[in-house]
Image 1 (cartoon, rainbow, N blue to C red):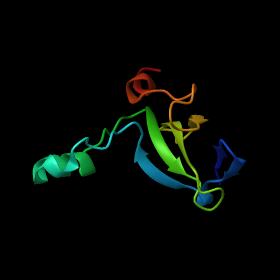
Image 2 (image 1 turned 90 degrees about the vertical axis):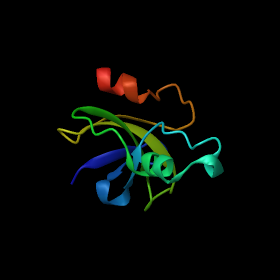
Image 3 (image 1 turned 135 degrees about the horizontal axis):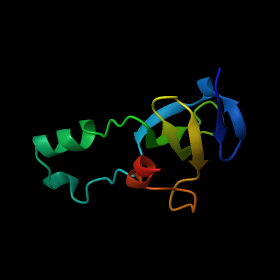
Image 4 (image 1 turned 45 degrees about the horizontal axis):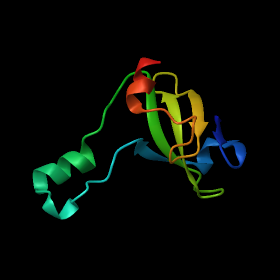
Length: 99
């Protein structure tokens, strides 16, 4: 079983975590103004890169906090984890793809 490093709790088994999707996706500023096509694009359309990918993860069976991670989608290896909201170790999706 793979160990995932929680920024608050340290390394834990992967079964304690849940994937939260692509990182750095901003919620629409005026959600009431979106039509069905725009909502569908916001909810369902995400990047599907091969290689490094910035993601959100939840330590759902532990501290229950969210964190950002850069994970290689080919090897499934976590390359970095960080606390969300502008933590210095957080990188953008564009940066993750070019590393």
